[in-house]
Amino acid sequence: MQKFDSDVLKQRTLTWSLLNIPLLKNFVFAIDDFDKRKMIENIICDFDSRVLSNLQSFKLVLIHGDFNEQNILVKKNQDGEFDVCGILDFGDTHYAPQLFDIAIACTYAMLECKTMDVIEAPRYVLKGYLQIINLTAEEWKILPLCVLARLAQSLTLGAYSYKCEPDEYVLTTARTGWSVLERLLKMEHEELVRLWKE
Figure 1 (tube, rainbow, N blue to C red):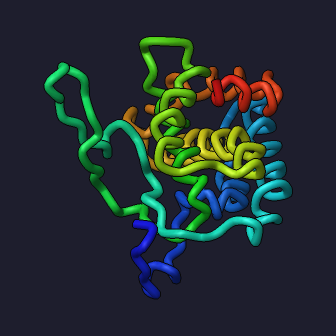
Figure 2: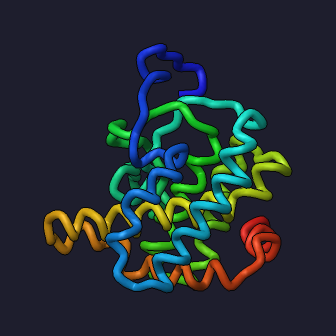
Figure 3: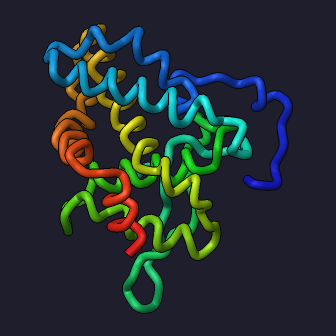
């Protein structure tokens, strides 16, 4: 996707893009718990000031926009291990900093993790990713905030969708997402970077 170019996709805007985190302010009313709503509002503010205000520092490329366990194809190799062989669902493809894709993948790895401490899951996503593409020092610095932003986005839009049309599916992230968010917020970003870099 790094070499693909599309003037049409460059005009595309998506509610689910991390570029639109400030729009979450229009949906936070759907979170009934005051403390949780305040957490989300703080993340929106922090992301806006630390990431979006410095957007010119990052090259915008075409990203998948929704790397999660349901959109990644794997096949079993001769050793009985699974290798990634493809991706599905390009419905959220848009131009954004490349870091957003890895942040989204790290977020969903934590939400779906059942084999280790969820806070450690991004380390394994990054271990594979970094074999192909390196992160700059600036990207490492804001990676935890990008993960927090995706969690905030998923939790907020899930709560809003549930208010509009009650369906348990839209609360999938909420099952583990709030506890993951609270744990991440108790940790310093530098501490998370050290853990994920190991």
